[in-house]
Length: 248
Image (tube, rainbow, N blue to C red):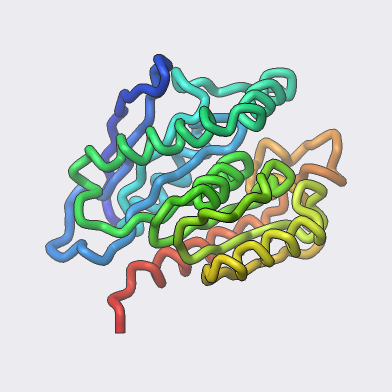
């Protein structure tokens, strides 16, 4: 298993201090020009131990990871009463929302571990919505992987999309990614000429990768699902490996 190293990275957006984190393989291989790097966009709970664990697994597989701080000041909200206003404020001010993603992207570009590598965005829940919105508004990256994204947060204006291969991992019973929402997103991606795939997990709702949802008071909306979580990890690993493969 590849050893990893990590460090905090301070950056700013509109006067707010953001505290991201680099998690990367300790030793850089001789040829890394095709190995994809990852901009990891956290879920509603911020840069939690869970997100750091996800980053560490990716770094152990050879992918340098930059954990974006979308809330600012490394905030890690713990309750719905804290989370709701944060997400609502971003949905009401998309320039600020996407500006924070762009600020993280710019901070990543200044880190030596990411030089010369293609980039994939990987987002969980709110972070998955963030990745898709960033693509919708013009991001050009190698890939976008969204794990149980809230499709209900997405704008429908895809007149100026960027480019990426797209992987969506969604619970078939997720009320925040209904069949109608999935169909509409698929139509947008097709119209934009973007390679994309949907992985649907049966008997699975929202936030299915998060152990925090293991004892959800509303399991019909939000619930941890170990098997679907494992399948999403495997799908993500395969997607990143595909993006890293030399062009034939």
